Image (cartoon, rainbow, N blue to C red; front, side, top):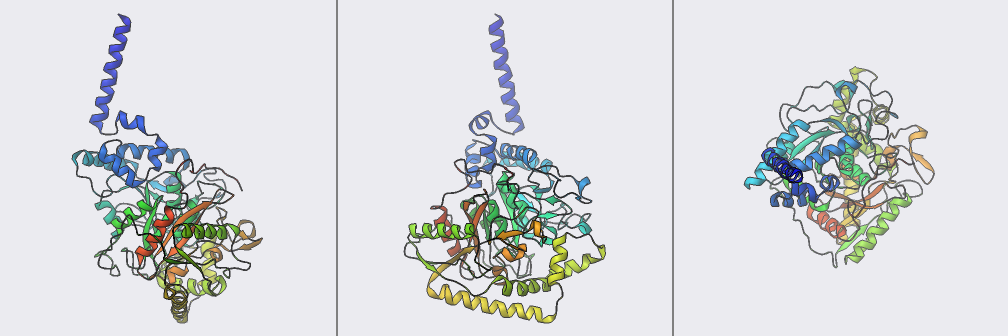
Length: 532
């Protein structure tokens, strides 16, 4: 009798639990029994949308899985800490530190709405998919402060920016803001305002910049998609270092600004998710004069590379003695993968190097609204992170000739690329993203915190090969992961196609994604080790 009562009580309790879950719309017992939190946190958006439609999981369940990972791996973030991070080395030690603030309450409400839309069959293209938002993209009611102390109390944004508006209209959920280097002026992400952001694959090393928090959040499983912007490699560097896909669209393809050095783009863990997100954010906007018409459509699948010519450049002249062994090996792997895919590989080299290119590029960049922004903040006093002071002391003494010199260099590079690559019949150029994947997380211009290649120490800006395509900004560039280094840091390459020929870059990336062993599958996930 007692046993029968216990069984009936258990059945009744289970029924109440089921009813509570159904009424609250948070998840289902079937979904919970089928997927682990890690599986949901890392699952690609295209797969999640499929599962949402089948009712096998819900946006609310995925959101909670990702929030749990934020609490486990990110470390502390709090407005009260934002006066100044005084101890960069110890603040959030052993944690990723990729978030400036969260909007979990709002995200939970949006996830419940998305749950209901899937039940009703009214889901939009990105319904219920979580997005980490870079501290640059304007979200109504959110603060953008460029990770700089003079702007830490900046008024909230009054409206969504053009890209955010497109994402919101298609049902994306904005869960948190991601960290950036101060004023976006470092190839690694740390600031006196928010501390050091560390690589989930190996916490000793950096995540890249300036969209470093976005790359780290994706690698850590904190969100499904993330936004990036790119003025000197700010999508491509963190994509490479965190083992994710990133796309620097040609200027104007995604409504960004009227600064020709800059563009916004997607950051994702898979090729298919990159296509999905790009198809949402692409296209003209009445908010941005330079945005291009008509909207371009990006297919999920592309024709074979059989018989197509693809150029590969190791950039042996960029620094003395050539790039690192890791950089060279990643191109060796890509070359083998291209040949396996049926492509004809043409090896090319270029004359320009970091010493001849970077000063002209930086002075050209500083001649844009970046100089105006810095100038408006200078009255705040000596509060900037060291790399900001370093760059402006090195490249901030401008004359009208500097922009002219940048334009002359642009013409030279364009002609060189055309003659050696595209006039030879190649559909794309594949090249390194960085001279080395091994940058200390708290990269500095001091000898103890500089990156090394072949025993030589370099300022961080000398080791990035990305700014070429911000000066030559009409070229589309996809960055994709290739392998892990012996220090467990991802290594990625850049795939450059001809001006405004986005689909050729996607075609090559698609072929390589089918040939090169992907990350975030079969046990190849970050393990949050911390080892030099």
